[in-house]
Length: 352
Image (tube, rainbow, N blue to C red; front, top):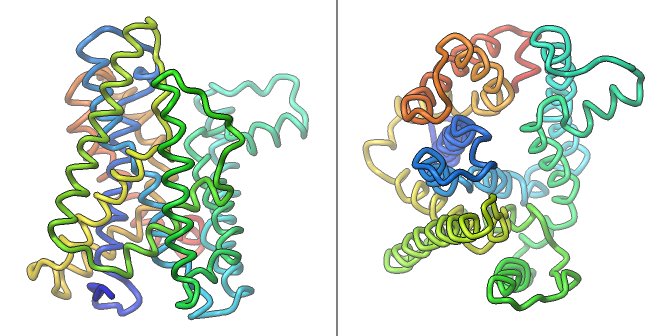
């Protein structure tokens, strides 16, 4: 079993904090790349945006993997009632607050959300279908993960370890590899699925990878596989889209084999990186811990920051300055705001 690197707070795991920071930066890179990638253009700007999309595509899966690390074996620390109470405080209450805030911002401040023919049903649809803020889909997804974890948490028991590996291997073969047969002109019934599905594969993977140490030679194989997977996503998208004259996403998906490989490679790399002697000291651990605690809040607020940055700077979303340099500007501004909010007693409940 792997020995975890801990921060000065024994409840915090160093590589989890580092991955938390890396994942939110990956999200910012994706969102700075803009929505332009979803409209195919035979241009250099579109092609470079696709490179960014492919490199950072596994951001959300990594966040879910961290949930597996910290929560899949929750029953060893507290009961299920306590588990759900903590999840409500952590995600449900902030989600309600930020959905309402984003509704006000979109409808009455920047006015890009119609309030004509207003009704309770339309209002609830705007909120609950993520029309108000599309990026908040992840919060609904993670609530679904939280609801499922109590059932699958029993896979962490030693007697069920083989079942845990069975679930991961079967998902990878049936749900991640087989669907790509369509690229060869072979259509397999969509009803053939391993039904422990969706984001739960990343919960299981996160937990397993937190418990084992992968030898160096296998880590290298994983890294190379992830790179090849990234190339596969880029090449198939480029070739198929150019042929069709429109964006073709037939090889895209969070549950594709290459996304799983990329997410695992990033996870394993930074887990190994966290064992570096220079990082295992109280000062470094405190910095990583402080930054990681702000990641959720940064996720909630960053689209507002991006909006005003674009408006004030007038920069093109396809410029390299916007897609690279301004990512760190967005991160710094969002971090500063969330850090301050966390110091205010009532406000910190909205950015736990």
